[in-house]
Image (spheres, rainbow, N blue to C red):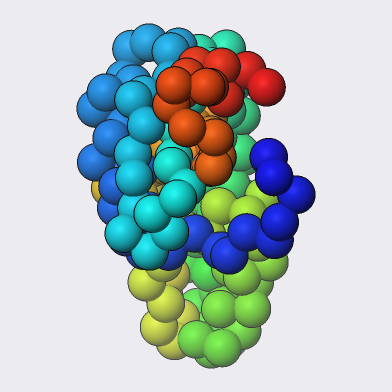
Length: 155
């Protein structure tokens, strides 16, 4: 790296990164470099080390399972209360604590009303995150002749 401050990744760079995922699915090598219009003197290389992706998948599955156990307990508790049902706000606070404990709110869809609570997995969100698990985007200003995509990922 050249030691200069690098601006945050733009939505264009995210789209380039996401579209380049097909190049690295199933392999541990870096992709060819991708140039961006916003910063033409910089290039991006994507890398996905397999052991890290597998570790993150296992961890996500464990956290989802723990969250689902707690959500099932909450749903049972809400349905049992018939004399004094919980309000939607009270259920929302309890559900927020459950999904916030393991940071899995983005993968769970909640339906809350007075005295009723249901939930389900957001499979699209889980699938998108699994595609991105373990992927690193390396931004470099070194020319490709001097430093290949694989070498920039290694360094």
